[in-house]
Amino acid sequence: MAHSTHHDDYQLLIAVLRTARRELRVTQVELGERLGNTQTFISKVERGERRLDVVEFVEFCEALGASPEETFRRYLGQRARGSPPGKKKASAGRSASG
Image 1 (tube, rainbow, N blue to C red):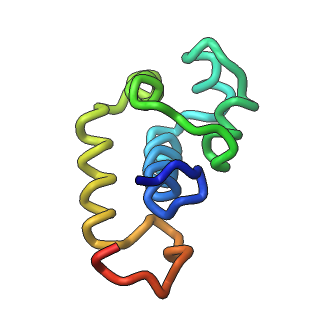
Image 2: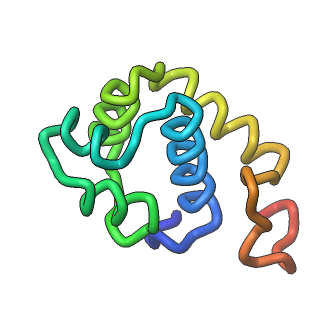
């Protein structure tokens, strides 16, 4: 089970959230305000310095105006294809079975 913010799957999840934020044209400042937090918090999440739990993931999506279910489906679809948006997998030598 992945516990690191540097794990490929977690980096993919963060990439999906960052892409959703950009597609919805929400700045880090705006998102921070919607969450009652700061731009620094959003930046740390998007850089992998701060890990989100599942409740925070839902709040993050809702603050964006994105469906948590659809956002997670998008993540799962990209994970199944092994294709992070705009990034290559960090461990290229990893086998398909994990």
